[in-house]
Every structure is written in structure tokens, then in C-alpha cells.
Amino acid sequence: MAQILLNSMGNDHNDYIKQQVQVKNPNLDSMEEDILYHFSLSTKTHNLPEMFGDIKFVCVGGSANRMRAFAQFMHQELKLPGNPKDIGDICEGTDRYSMYKVGPVLSISHGMGVPSISIMLHELIKLLYHAQCRDVVLFRLGTSGGVGLAPGTVVITEKAVDYSFRPQIEQVVLGKVVTRSTELDEGVADELLQCSSEIPNLPTVIGNTMCTHDFYEGQGRLDGALCSFSHEEKLEYLRKAYEAGVRNIEMESTVFAAMCRVCGLKAAVVCVTLLNRFDGDQITSPHDVLVEYQQRPQVLVSHFIKKRLGLTA
Image (cartoon, rainbow, N blue to C red):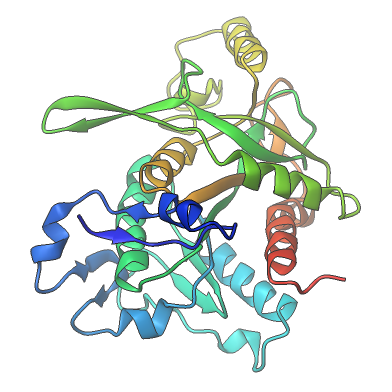
């Protein structure tokens, strides 16, 4: 079966073997060419090991503009030569996703919702396999609605949970439901929390993240085109979520956690809260405040990356 070998963080050879990441598809070995259609890349037309073999950190987020800005930010943080504004979109041949490479960091947009990010993840994981990458850590950077948290709080996800607060995702395969665990790497989460304590004015917590199928009804909003529940029913649901350890709500974390877990990739979800859902449904903070909030996960993950690379004092 096709697999990615990832270096262990330790020195023990057995630990190294345990870190093997498997692409769960035996059909890949018999394919003459693998077309990563939504990336506009292919194993025949591109030298993927040469292009991506040095990647150690992959950061994904919904917005193409935000991930381009993150790539430019990382270019400055890593003190790389050249103008950050000249970083090109590797996926310019398609309008589905955007991808930027900055040294050992890959920054990719994934759109909104589980279907969009899952397509991207299939092709990303195959890309890492074909490029023979090792020791890769994946991050989802995003925004979210807080549950009992002040706006601007960064949430490092402990477990990504579904609408019933279960750490799992149900994927339908050939008409059958396949259930996959959505637990994330505890060591990476703890390391991120430690990094947050080294950055001033960066309120950060570890908690569960609820992943929903949409922005409105699935998240208990009262302001959508459709609403069949009362304000009291909404608050009761949010209270149950809070009691279950949920601290924020978004729309991609379960499939991100599940696919990374199945393939043995270390991963973390880092999202900032734009509002406290107990206080309302609409995002009313001024634009400049929201921009600063959205930069907080980027600042935290960049600090993590620089520490891993030995670039911090």
C-alpha cells in the first residue's frame, strides 16, 4: 500500500516506523499518472519531489486572500530573500484553490465547508505522498463563533465534534456510513498552548470545536432565511454544547481531523472567535478589529513554526 514515511520526533528507529503515514488507497501504486485536478498539478507534468519535498508545515484556511497574506507574513517571519508580494499562486491554473510555498511552509485555501476542504485534503495528502515529504505538521487556521468566550479568543481544538458533540464524522461510502474518529494530536495542541503564553495579548484556550454543515440553521442562528426554533431553544443548545466542552463552532474541523488521523499526520485546528454566540448571531465588530482577530491564529502558528525551526531567541 502506498505510504508516506515521516521522521519521528525522537531518535528510536521503532518510533520512526510508527510514524509511517499511509495513503489508504492501494490503487495509487498502479496508476501511471495521478492528476491532482483541483490543484492543476500532475505526477507526469510536475516534479513534485523537487517542488515540495522540503515541506514541513502545511497551513490551510478558507479564504484565498487570507492564505496569500499568511504566505507573505511567513516570508517576512522567516526572513527569506525577495519580495513577499512576488510569491506566486502554484494553483493559478485552477480557480478552486490557491497555494503558496514559502520555504518549508505550504499555505493553501480550502473554501468553506466539509465538502470543499475534503476535496482539497485528498489531493494535498496525495501531493505529500508523491513529493516524499517527511515530518509534516498540518494546521487549519480559521475564524469561528465562540461559545462562552470573548471575541478575539484563539481556540486550539482538543477534539472536533459533530452536532451531537461526538468526536467523530460520518462519511457515506458506496451508500454505507463509515464513522471516523476526529481526535487531534495532543502534543501539538500543548505545544501551541505553550507558544501562546510567549506572545503578549493573545488570549488562548484549548477546547472542543463543533463542526456543522452550514453557517445558519446548523449553528443555531436566528438570522438566516430559514429558522424553525426560538431564542430560548438556541440558548439551550449552546448551553449543552458548552457543558460538553465545546468552545467554538465552525464548518471544517471534523473532516480535517479525521483525514489527518487516518493518514497518521500530526495536525491542529487553530481558530479565533469573532463573537460570543450567547450574545448574538451577527458579526458586528469593526473591520479593522476583525482583521486583527483573523491574524491571531497566524501569529500563533508562525511562532510555533519558528520555534520548530530554531529561529526564536
